[in-house]
Image 1 (spheres, helix red, strand yellow):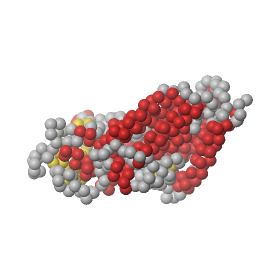
Image 2 (cartoon, rainbow, N blue to C red):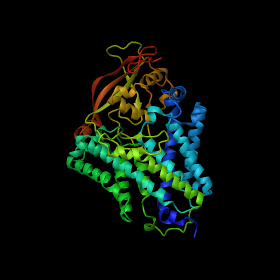
Image 3 (tube, helix red, strand yellow):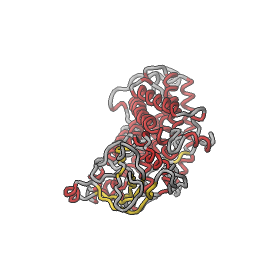
Image 4 (cartoon, rainbow, N blue to C red):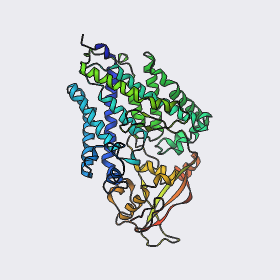
Amino acid sequence: MEPFAWFASSDYWLGRLVFQRGLAGVYLVAFLCAALQFRPLIGERGMTPVPAYLRRVPARRAPSLFRLHYSDRFFAVCAWTGAGLALALAAGAGDAVPLAVSMPLWAVLWGLYLSIVNVGQTWYGFGWESLLLEAGFLAIFLGNDETAPPVLLMWLLRWLVFRVEFGAGLIKLRGDRCWRDLTCLCHHHETQPMPGPLSWFFHRLPRPLHKVEAAANHVTQLVVPFLLFAPQPVATAAALTIAVTQLWLVLSGNFAWLNWITIVLALSAVDGRLVAEAPNLPGPPLWYAVAVTAVTVLVLALSVRPVRNLLSRRQAMNRSFDPLHLVNTYGAFGTVGRVRYEIVVEGTTEPVAREGTVWRAYEFRGKPGDVRRLPRQFAPYHLRLDWMMWFAALSPAYAAQWFGPFVERLLEGDRDTLRLLRRDPFPGAPPALVRARLYRYRFTTWRELRSTGAWWERTPVRDFLPPTRLGTAAPGDGSRAA
């Protein structure tokens, strides 16, 4: 028998395989999002440039490879390198090399993405960024086919998915009253950040079914996570229940890779013996067992603050307690909006705005705009600008740092910024003026859809940004549009 064979078990072979391959797939999407969107968002000429951010923020708060050097070319190299490495690991490269090589490959992947998140500013302030980093850190120490999966690390994966689900359940129970009277989902499908192609149909489900949805959500998030720690096959049943619930969320909206990484984490608890006979994998070498033990102790020590947060009546959601995002707290939709607001950005070639001026709208890829356009499915891909536009509609404070620069780039006809959009209404030359108006959106009824062909009905509320040209002040952040 190999030394420390008791420390690992081949019974977890399927959980490790599914988790590592699935996580590599999520990493691939994340790095592609970074590579394809960073220039207009955080590049050297971006809305919130990385160099300026690094000058403001000390290294201890945001450790990153880009503190050694930053250029758009270097960032692109890092992002595409991460995408290529993630693709290789998803294809099984981690099992094709020795254990001492596989672990550094996962560490490079984690380090590259940590470097991106820590300079990403508001564009990377989402819970699924920290979730990917926390899961990615654990993946470094899960080993490969040269050794049986370490039991302690496999249980830490369950601890992570427990915090994701239970934290989300508690934030709902403590938050909006509609979660307690089971009516939140009468509104959520319509007011969520980025509806999907089936969201209209989910919204139009009968009210009693919405209550069943909400009740099932409470059971899945507040009861089922405890069963992950039960003996098999109960833990497998709990994992599959969580996975099915997450697939329901995938169908009803766009939440980047949050649902997919939660599914991958949950499936790590599936008992491989239910699928096939476990392979006879060797036990871990001494150095590896020591590393796994040290990581387990570290994670348990860092879990103290997240646990305190879970137990607190002032529970915070989606917060990192250390700059490496090693152990975090999670949660979503403690409050559900009853009304949907959208910012419609428009431009005109006329030099002076007057009554009768013809304004043409910029169309975004994911967020609602044209009332006749059915929302599209983009998740697990993350449209960062579209998401931030949803937050900006809730409060101009969310747009204080970047909306003025965004308008400036539209007035300049900046190609990188325009690539973030679905349609540029001024393909020949940039507009003379840009404005933004706030609208109230609601899903149409069945009768309205049949008669008008429109999925949305919208009503103007107020100006968000008055007609603005290059060289004039951009309200909201005190900066200038040029």
